[in-house]
Image (cartoon, rainbow, N blue to C red; front, side, top):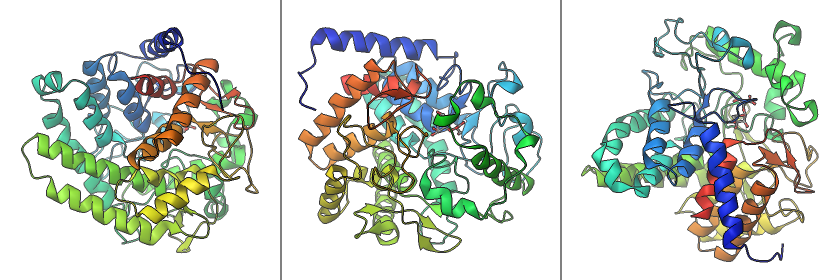
Length: 439
Ligand code: 2M8
């Protein structure tokens, strides 16, 4: 990791490359994660993309978030995919005819004029909105950006802390492995083993048209993903009526909710509203996160399975992401930093953090969220380290992120044992977060 400092020329080339990816992946109102593998708008991708896009065009970054929030349902949920009607049905699975959002006539109140999925992704949006505002406050005020997005963001958090507080603890629950954004993490293996898969012959996986089977979830995983999504759809996406055979409290999802609640406090103050309720909620979330999900022995936060009411004893990058939370007890910060530096998460080939414990039984260096290192989680950990004053450590992650992003053609993820790119290339959040760290 002792590499020479970057030159201004290398930074310029990297900045141009990253900007090119974002320009190419822009559709006119939002950005696709990848032109090949993910040809629609994804929820947490858009938040990360806006965080980078703000350095190119604050206006475009605002539109990225606005177009996503325009697809919000009446119950407050922000869907994990907003479909582009110009893209053929077979280009991505599951497509709108599977989710049936606009026609279901269900109580959750999906928009009638566009097609979306019915599940959610981690709430990075209020944080993104606040960062986008800060990039150009004059332009943001001129367009009334924050006052327009604020009601959407508060309704979104109210949904998560209301209908989605399935454990009654004050944390939000995920009800599908696609919701935490880390689809096939070994953390879900146990809870998923209870779900009977739908026959894989009954659908066609479009992801395998572009992705290598060794880098993607298995057919068995997909059979279970489709079963869970179909059951939720058939319960009209009604969280009270649905049985939720899969329900967990995920540490990364809830850490992002906490940080976003702090961002809502900042946004409220900027708008002349009272920040105190948001600040108080963020503090309550921090305490609950620690009380429910911190595990001293693991040196990490763990997901809680709400069906068995037990912690899932698998360490993943999701359990390190709460480093982002500003009010975390100092002893926990020290322990998390120790875990990051230990054999489970310190890889020699790259300072990017592996998605799953390098020494864990399910570690797989190429298969998606079962080991590969991702750029969005590296960005979160980098930011978390700075939040707690660990700048030298954050500098190492930053340097590695910049080098690996450019060297891999803005790969979706990398093999943590070699630093080699895997998955899609010209991947939007990789480019966006590169731009953010260059500023
Ligand atoms: C991946 O998830 C989608 C389903 O939402 C897929 O595998 O088709 C995940 O990496 C997720 O975190 C990400 O938001 C999405 C689009 O980049 O792809």
